[in-house]
Length: 344
Image: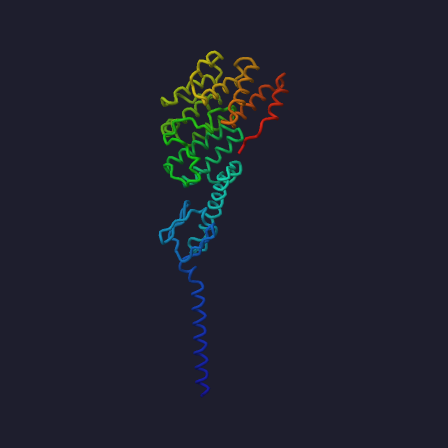
């Protein structure tokens, strides 16, 4: 065999080896070049399906499948999508995943940490859950004024998806899509004038008050009583017939109704109305004797501590505030020390 023949054979072998190497590298990298590798949080692996589009709600694959960001643990996708995918997993997926798990654990205090970044999400489902969690968290802390803002945001979000939500979250939905009844886990009971003023300003950012009330009739109750607490005249907001009796609480909150008139006002009304009326009358320093006001608040704390624990605790706090520096303070301190913390 000539030297030239040997050299030709070596060159042929080298070319074949190079071709095989390139082929193996191509095969090994094919899933990443032609599609992507996505790992879901349940460790399901999705390969060789191209990403066709994405937004702040979900990732869409060529096969028609869509994935919400909280479903995705990590993803290696086409270069033109990679940066945005990484950002959405970090900024949307991770806090949404934590939010849902904390809601399922009924821990709204921790849920609020994740919710804060999601309250303005373009996805109405996420926006609903985030604001609902913030509402519960504020209410559990006795901050009923900012809780109302989150409640109205959550209601507006719920109207967008018409009650379609993951079954484990259905218990968070507001009971009626007409939103024309007072919400039991956030009664319209307020005590902080400065916080009420801020809540009114924040609600104003949701749009014109009358337009808001047309969408959410119950907003008339909350806005009117926030206004009374803040010492602001909200205006003559329309009240639906089913809520018209709540209008009579505005003069109660302003301290313009005596005890006899109060008894007439609450006669025959449901318990939520009676609680709110008694609270406003008792916390107004223009009304009755100190002892009667404290007793009114203590009745709320005692009679409704199981059904309305947040309002019961708020009533006890207000009773202690009124009693401060008086002969009733020592007795109130004893009651407060024996009252369990019902915050979630």
